[in-house]
Image (cartoon, rainbow, N blue to C red; front, top):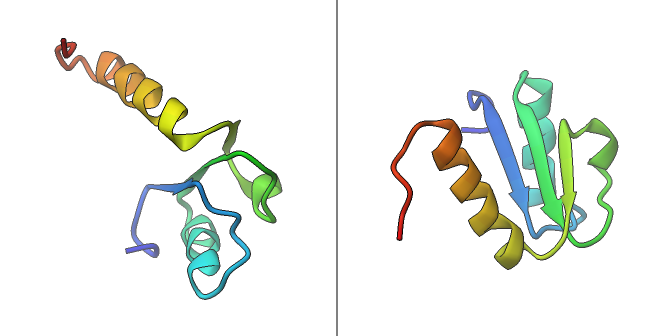
Length: 77
């Protein structure tokens, strides 16, 4: 999956525990965009296309709501 994705989301991970920490790097190497959501810095922050600092539980609902607007999906109540 990492080798063929267009966008890799790394959410709530320090990206220091392997082998899982290597998955975002593989995706990036294959041309995917990399978005990191984490409270602290990670070793891949410099390679990321976007880094958001904060709690995943607070940021993800806002990200999904914004994505729905951008994609023309109806708003949820």
